[in-house]
Image 1 (cartoon, rainbow, N blue to C red):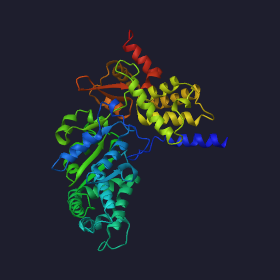
Image 2 (cartoon, helix red, strand yellow):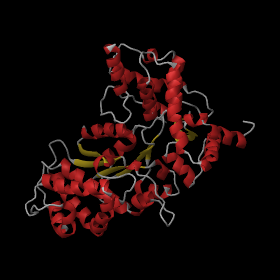
Image 3 (cartoon, rainbow, N blue to C red):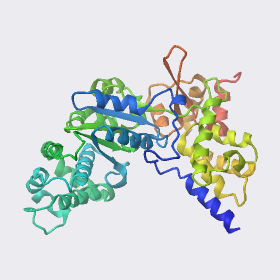
Image 4 (tube, rainbow, N blue to C red):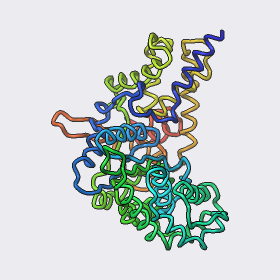
Amino acid sequence: MTSDFDFLKGLYNAFNPFQPLPAGDPAYVDCHEVRGDGDILESVGKEILYSDRNTCQLYAGHRGVGKSTELLRLQKFLDERGFFVVYFAADDADIDPEDVQYTDILLACTRNILAAFKDRTDSPALLNWLKQQCNNLRDFLQTEISLDDLSIEAQVSQFAKITTKIRSEPTERRKIRDLINPHTTTLTKALNEFIQDVKKNLPSGYDQLVLIADNLDRIVPVIQEDKRSNHDQIFIDRNEQLKDLDCHLIYTVPISLIYSDRSASLLDIYGTPQVLPMIMVLTPENKPYQPGIEKVIEVLQKRLSTIDSSKSIVDLFENRKSLEILCLMSGGHTRNLLLLMKEALKYTNTLPISNNVLQRSISELRNTYKHTVYANEWEALAKVHQSKIIENNQLCRGLLFNRCILEYRYQEVNGGIKLWYDIHPLIKGIKEFQDAYNQLYPNA
């Protein structure tokens, strides 16, 4: 009994959907062939490798599709080629995705660059900026220490206090922004001076610096009084400041922004944004796509193999058909795939996972999507499912952001990339969707 319990517990944790895989992890599966043949090492990495100047690139995709795992691969790829990479997940300690402004991102970049080089430089640039803002920020820093001789590590602590308050204390957030906003230009200048000093003292074998700001794609869209979103204000209006740091830059951005009416502006400002689509498990004709299903099964098998390499993932289910149902219901969305597995294991006392348990885990995740969709959105979802395209409006962008609409790509015979959309497969089993679809397409 204990052995069964320990094995199920190990499985449950092996299918953790919220922890990105580090570069080189044995559980990693290369899915580029069923994601439109895109590879971050080429699309983003070579832009940095080949460019004679600093670059600023945007990376997008649905939350939970595997962007962080791919960015960690890119970090290793660049590190091996002489680029010192500072990677940070912005929502871990620096921002509140529900309420973000540009200032918060600049402060997050500052804190993480400081932290990465706290033992490698004694540059006074950011200390001097802190001194200049001392009177304004003293109440928020709540420190009695002298700023005259503050070590780099102590400076990290001061900026961490600011970002922590911005992230966790809504009542203080606006006050801090109001104090710092007029001084973002001088902060950027000071940070660039710090970066320039850092570049002179990079470890042996490194000659350039790359900053990756991850999880900015989780910034919740908020429509302002002027009908523009906070996404516009951060990535369009403040683009000069976002691009102004003296190093190569990669920012993750919400996928809904990539497919908004600002897409041409993004192209002009940043170049072509790179998007990580779903693993294609269905064709645009609504038929199972076997290469994609096999790749999803491989994802599960690799996770199982970290616990017991002698077992087959098929043996965890009553039959292979049940396993393929799980793959199809995930929509090729990695996090949903792992969530479905965890839910099924949670209600399993002895293997294999029964069909009833599998259906229970599918139903519970389906209910989550049902609660996500507003009454006026079912018709839009029906149209997307029928046409496999999305309309350029706020409603569809919101459904993209909430992962109710998913993006897929495949490589055509002539080498071109075909882009198409569909609703999350779980939504197809919701009565409200079925009613809307049947009303619009009674003969389908």
